[in-house]
Image (cartoon, rainbow, N blue to C red; front, side, top):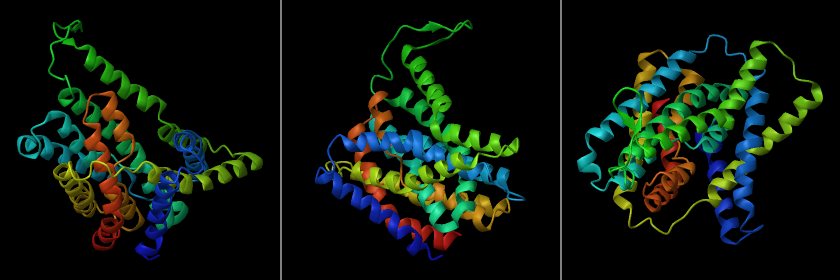
Amino acid sequence: MNVLTAIGPIFALIMLGFALRRNEFPGRDFWPQAERLTYYVLFPALLIDKLSGIHLGDQPVWSMAIAMGLSVCLVAALLLALRPRIQTDSPAFTSVFQGAMRPNTYVGLSAASGLFGDTGVSLSAVALMTLIPLVNVLCVTILIRHGRNGHAAVHTIDDGNGGGLSPRQTMGLRITLRQLAANPLILGCLAGFLLNGLQISIPHALGEGLRVLGSASLPMGLLSVGAGLSFGTLVRARRDILTSAACKLFLLPALTALLCHMFGVAGTALGICLIFTAIPVSVSSYILARILGGDHDSMAAIITAQTLLSAITMPAVLTLLS
């Protein structure tokens, strides 16, 4: 399938979501609830449905995971090494860092389904299980270290080894562990793999229900992405936007492609690795920035700009590197 043909409808739905929210249809309170429904119900249903019958065969699952995980770690290390030149304001740096790391799973799953069908959705589980835990740990750690008041003197909690964890660090660790343990996408992947591994057949009526719910997940998720776009701070944060976009939309997929070729990952598996490293930053980055003292205004600008830019960069990356 032509890349533009598959990806074009994705960004058409995103812009439709933006237009609907701008016109307050069906209502201002609808979109947060729609995103919750998609995240906690529709996407897990899609993953359980696809993964319970998955047959990966000789797909290079471990090579995919290593290529994606290593490329993320390399970009993270580069950003930290160049931090004084990238952004001297610590909270703003956390937004650049998140912008270079976090994948928007709504866009990724939609692109995987559009380009590679059920096989693409099934292989997406490898990307989700690799990137979600890794990116959460990296981003929360950076937010704890460089977020607002990150250097403030606080009482420590004795860890039994003569050192201590500050209340802020403890909160960040708890948030990370709670996010991972309760992440509906990870739980959906685990449930699907468990059903598959135990060769448990889903009853027909339940299976049809999962399929119907899963089919609603992609359009609803993309509309929600569009509804979350904000253009208010694009000009003020232009330097942060350019830096994060260069890392997220170009450098990260380029490194992933190089590592995939080194590890012999090709075909659909390579395409999935590129999709999940070339997609724009997740809207959830804004929420995390607010909770842990990042620059949430800059984060909102980065999310909006990357979402728009990726309409051009994703087809180019997938065409040139796959």
